[in-house]
Image 1: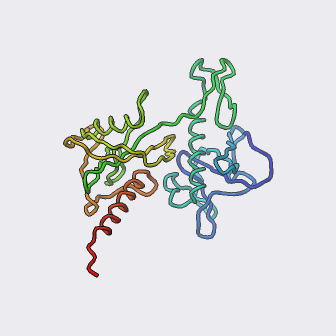
Image 2: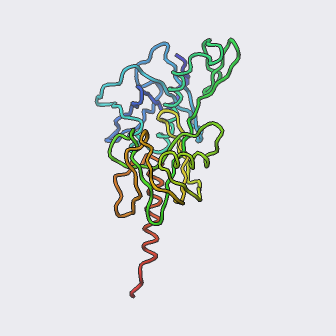
Image 3: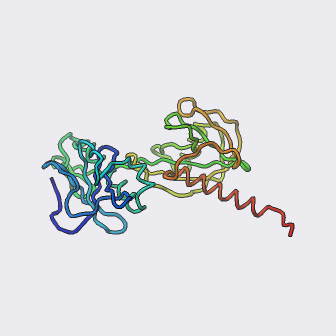
Length: 274
């Protein structure tokens, strides 16, 4: 166990797989904020000491079995915590989860196979050959495609539910983000697009991703779904939208931005009879 012995209170992010320990506090759920770990920990448990953009130091570790719900604690999924935690705590929970996942999957050197040891809070080194490694981030694109007053929505085979989302896919070695957008759209739908524009990015800690969002315009082609990836897809207007993703996702941010834009255009185009 590697733990700072200072007595100041800190946030403690405790995970059992993707389940996060939260504290019941006057009807609200929050991350435990205290001096000591909120659960018993083993002598060999690695307690990660981390920080982010705001400079606040926080701790994180994993447990083998989930904590049974009681009057003080319960556990919730990391994705579900988006709707419960304040934004800064959700972001820190994401980083904590990614570091715990990376630690569990990087015990041995990828070059010589010898054990790796921590060289910093977010890096490891092989004491045999000197190879250094850092957490890997899988970069993916996601794109909202507009055709006149419609957008393309698809249902991927790995979706858990009946909602429709946007075309997305992982960036391949040797291609730019924009090239990835064009390729994924062509591979998954058979459509050609134009006017690709950056929208926003989002850390996606499920387990270690970065989503990069774009908008684009339909140029040509007929929808031909990639059967191995998508089970349904079509263009939809604002009035006939299917179920869409929850607010945790960049897909929802892109869709909400488009819906707001459509509403503003409709308001501006209304005749003035006064």
